[in-house]
Structure formats: C-alpha cells, structure tokens
Length: 292
Image (tube, rainbow, N blue to C red; front, top):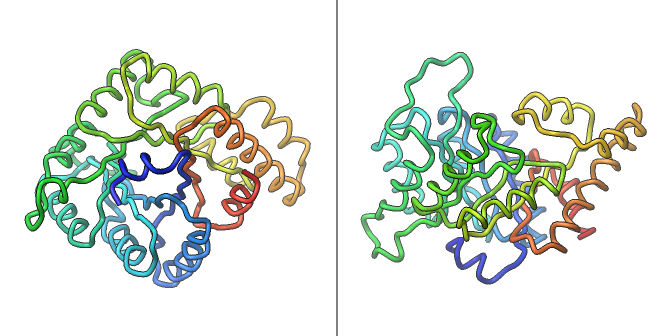
C-alpha cells in the first residue's frame, strides 16, 4: 500500500523499525520477532540501511522476506551517500518488482574510517527527487510511483546548528517530493511539538511521524548518548534513571513507563504516527502497544 493511502486511512499510525542481522541465524530470529509484532497490526515496518550502503543486500533480502512471509508493508531505508544513479536505479527496480511501494530516503553517513566519495547524490533532497522521477519499466506512471519518506530532527540536525537553515533544508526535501517525515528519536515531547510548529510555519504540510526509543537498559542509554548525535536526556528522565540504580528490572520499567507516557501525550496532541525503534526486540514494543 502506498504511504499516502496509509496516512489517509489511519491516525495515528503505528510502525516499527528493524535492522538487518548479519547472520542467517540472526535473520531467522528477527523474523520470529517481526511475525510476533505483526499481530499488533502496524501500518508499516521499516528496515535500516547501513552507513554507505554497507547492509544493502541484507536490507533488500530482509524486505523481501517480510513482503513474502507476512502481510506487513515494508519500507526500506535508502541512503544517498556514496551511491551512483545506476546503483539506486537497480535497487528501485528490484523493490518495485517485489511489490514494495515506499522508500525512506536519507542522506546517510559514510562508513567509519572511510574516504569514500559522496557519489551522485550530495544531499537527501537529490535522492528524493530521483526516486520521485523513477518509473518502474513495467508499470503505469501512477502504479510505479514510490511513496517517499524523509528524516526530521526535533532536537536539531547535528550537522546544521543554524535552525533556520535546517528548516530550509527540510522544506527542500519535502518540495522535492517527500510524502511524510519520520523523526529521529527524542525524549522531550516539547521538542517535537516545537518542531511540528516550525514545520507548519515553514509551509511543510506532510504527516510527521514521531520516532520513539524506549530505554530498557543502562547499555542502550549510554549507546544513545554516543550514537544519536548527542540526544538530550531531560532532567526528569535522568532522575528516574538514577532512582532505578543498578536494578535492571527497575531500569526497564522506567524506560517503558517513560516511553508510554511520551506516546500517550503525543497521541492526545494529534500526532500523525508513532514509530517505535525496536532494536530487533519485541518486548518493549509490545508493552507500549498494550498501554496506549
């Protein structure tokens, strides 16, 4: 189903994100998780794409399995960094042949310790425009058109400290043909509401899906602090984490309760969708679904 039809028929949408495992055993285990979460009837699920396309084949193969073995709507991530037009064309043809109708188009980052060239798509908007112009060779213009999502950053884009310029870049991606925005994770809903208001002020009228990451351990808290471009942890959350101490069960409960509270408030305030970052696990996502 095309993403525009999904947003027209559901509000808020519920969706999950997965990443492709590196081993066959990991993939089989993840498919069990995916099929378990499929009972929650998400509007779609997304599959990430490693830096510089490092998981290109794994991403495509997992998307193909999801498409073949479930009734879910898979949305593969696709990054522009380091890619040539011929490579992107081949991937789009492959996805169209599978019956995949939506793409999440991202700029992406270079692999670590890599000096790879940026490729033919300097910015995400260039990739969005290319996907929008793509036409599957065996289908009509309407049937062959991909739905396209792009990333948004409620806390601010890490590479663009100028917030006015940041919104100009986001507006350019939408104007290039994006159908919706899926945000990076955040822990203060005020950041999301301010982001949504600034989008409206900039003339951005597409649905904005909120990215939610339930913190379930000290390990993923520290990992987020390192990887998520300096994610901000509100004092309220830090105080709850401190109270949990070294008790993993208490920490898990704190993270889930906080995410559930976030989702409840976002839903009350009319969010277009909730996108749960699952880290390929089902328990936290299930707990959130059961409580909202």
